[in-house]
Length: 266
Image (cartoon, rainbow, N blue to C red):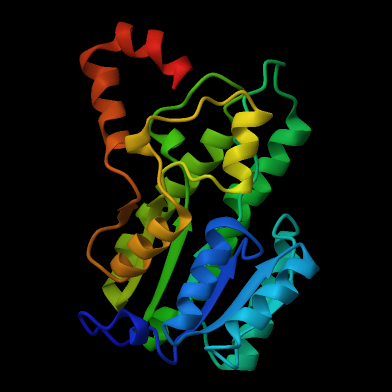
């Protein structure tokens, strides 16, 4: 990996990167930014028409980049695609698990079927992919996996809790495995991206009853992508898109009554 301060456009030259959730939002922005920075990017998502457009844009700066139609809720299918990508390119240097599902406030009592779907997409798929690609990275002494979670992990709001639980499980598992992988030069990161005005973020507000967070907890996908790509491979396991959400756990401890009274409104 090239680490050239001030030359971010070439930092990822010749790296092989896989990005899930690449058809829109933060995943799309990361795929484009990595391609611009010299990486060979394989974007994975469900919507083929959007992936066709993404592939065309990426190839303007990264001719070997491509896209695949993949539904990560089919965990075994997702792993087969990762194996094929490794066989085609010889390795995977970066794996960014951005795809996610849920995050809507629902008043009805949870049922197990939708909860299992959320867990498959938000936890089992990225966790299984980490288990699949990290051994090769450790053998080469080089590699990065970044799993995108949510600030709701730190401050769960009212609702069924499936989204928050799936992201919390992923954050904990990623951090635990980072101690083992780090011994061999492999970096695992947990990304707390802040709220972004992506399709998923806007749907959470317009359809899911989630209030728009305070300005200090909101960021654009361009900003968050830049933060992630600057901090990948660093010593810190956590990558934070915004600082304000870091105060939520402290408020919950110091002023618990006030916190629990106000949390449903943010």
